[in-house]
Image (cartoon, rainbow, N blue to C red; front, side, top):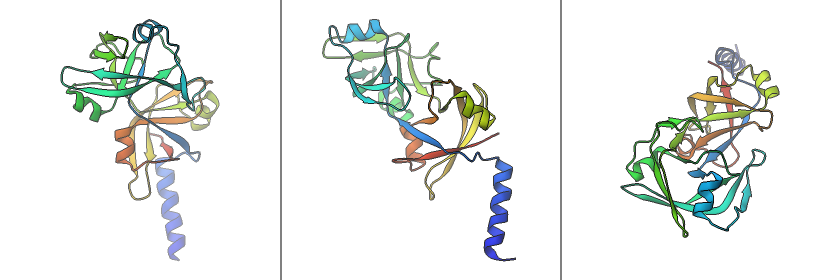
Length: 211
């Protein structure tokens, strides 16, 4: 048996075993950022409308011109960007490295699941807001419209494993949550710690490995 033929057979066996999806999903690397309610935003930026700096891939979402300083008892992070549009809850999404810099124990949560999370202070040049809760490390997740989710055979809230990374530093990320909405564009969101671990930079893609 020729070497190339043997390699093709082995590749097929591995692919069939892992059930790797054929379609690749773009990866979006999320740096630390903040979501705010209209009330909190107005307290931090009175008479200053939120301004678009850069539109993001998900429809209607953008990085704002406005930034804040995130303050804990043991440290601070400056120029943390606000993401728009304004939401029904205020939330600060950080990495594990950020949490260590702030001297905080921050849980890994799906966005919006902020009950029981630690509070944190947000400071602008106009004032400050002390959030009673809302500091999280965002759980890795994949945005999919329903048609693509059906093609992949995955459901809302399901956790899958995902193959990501460069050829010399690829990794499998487990417990990646599927989020389905027909307004979504297919995209996987990971934080900067996860991206660095897998040597992800520029245009990168992920493949779902169904568990």
